[in-house]
Length: 301
Image (cartoon, rainbow, N blue to C red; front, side, top):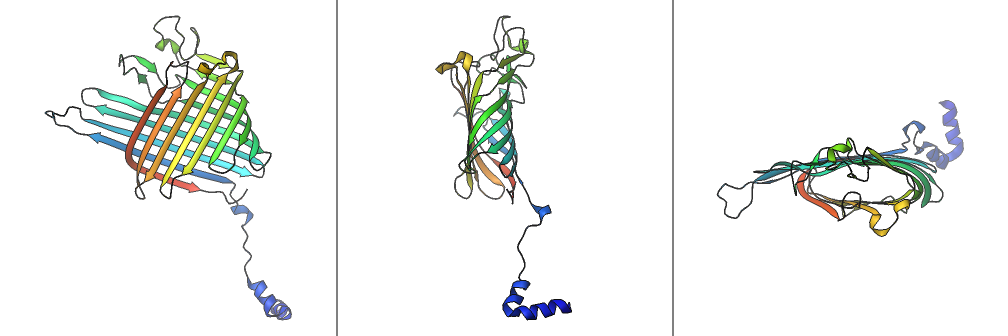
């Protein structure tokens, strides 16, 4: 202590002040290279009509569940991004019973190596399917047309990624082999010769090795209390390459927080996939509910 006091006197007032100021450094054991986020919500909609309601219609109640979890690692030129994105919604209508309205299971993991601040190389694996059985509500509501892992699309993509900022990413994959899985495909065949989701009779899977994928993601704040999240996926098989045989899928969700817990959400899914249907498919939902969100940003790179 005496030696320290003598040293401060020798340095003078300026030196003593410099020695007294704390050094603002982050201890090595508290560096966080992981950025994580979690969003979970429950939304509901309801309509109650008396039996003698002359305006027509029917009573109904609907519930939707959403879950999104991200864990992204970034250190130097290396990154590892992971996402689980789940959505499920159903509705009970008087006289019609329970019907599923929306169902999505999306898993994605990607390793990236930056070449420049905005461009890098990557390898990714993603899977898309659904949780619950689906029925032909526009025709025979007892006919099963889809189920868990029926279909499921598992894609292994290699290519380059453009990431100009933290909100937008574009993956360009000239080589993206895809495995289509239809669990117990015979359940969906009316005739033994039927091709189900691109899977030939006598098989439950289909490999498309020579294929390409484009994946674009946008996570854009819309003011202090609203957010737009969009994902677009294009898939093309080189062996059957033509304009009408390129698959497209767009998932879009807009969420606005009313207060700390209450939120309003609008979501839509648009699909064109010739192996499923020759026409464009779409679904949308608007709901009010509870949204819980939590983020832990990284403090190092």
